Image 1 (cartoon, helix red, strand yellow):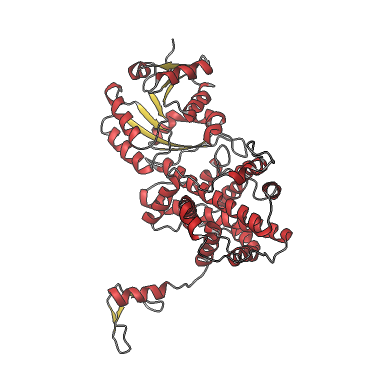
Image 2 (tube, one colour):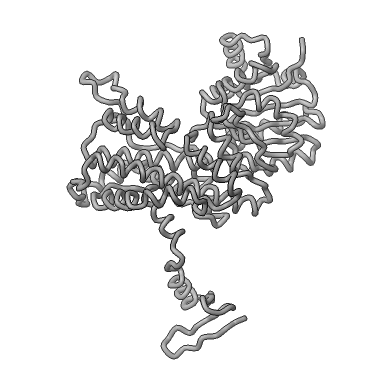
Length: 477
């Protein structure tokens, strides 16, 4: 029996689907800690390119050398434990590929740890959920470029296709770059979903629309500039009736309004603070989910405070158009924040990130795939590594929608409808496009209580003032 070209450890649904995807063109061995899972998988999906093993040594011996060993297990300590169990049976030069949602800092650490032992560790972000893993995900590989060249033929075969039918995979950068980009991808996903949820709430509360009526509006949006996978799946979600209801109520109305999260959005927000990069849209989306979890507090507090009687002054058809422009502008601003963070990370971690390529590989397979990404790819090809809001095409789009954006946010705020991410996108935009803000006041306060000094707009140097009326002003350098 021929040895396999690659192996995969971990046969939960994502692992099974990725293995099936790989097996279409490459021989693959699989291993799962529970052998029954392996047997059931092989029984369900018979394929001459698929073989499974009960023990790790047998699994390792079934692979061509240097071995390519994919890992699809829970992020964190389980990966470290698996690595330790593999070390005694690996050979120098073998390559471990982490396909999971690992923290990029862990990927950097593991690469260094295994390099000292003459093994290779490579991180690859995978987006697309169960369907993407089976039919073509977006792949974000990061690590040693020579290792990527060994993996590229397999990655090219299993990846989704972009709008020009090219594989949605591109070498991202050294060590943890791939998992970093996947982390930010997930953060953007948080932001987009939160903004869609806010639009849903505004239509439901502001105009009393039922779920299928909102579905029709989202379908209209999906035929225009907001065309995307998330709007596409939102339509049947909003139209689905509840099978447990005798009166054909809609399932969306029966779902408890507490949103879960697996950590990547939180990691993105935390890393933005570490890098000093504003990522307010994503951070607010994380806060919105955290707020949703405190349902008992919300129920109790709702009885203590008066809310305005909702009465939108904007005709529905006009609001539908305004909301479309608001969503599009806010999503551009969220992407602008994400790519600005890429700039900070590229400098901090010494990564050569290609913004146009990142925009391209997100066009297929991944959860945030959208027509908007073609606009970003074109813009970054014309002006690489430029701040997104400084690109002419983007500025024209936002300028054309600004009145609608401001009006929509203002109307929702007057009606007591919370907009965590949509309002944050607007406030971020207003701040980023003001040549002078209010931070001068903060610097004066800091200098007053802590002698932190300040700079002036009319001369060089650092200054410290005694802030009473007759206090001195001192130039320190």
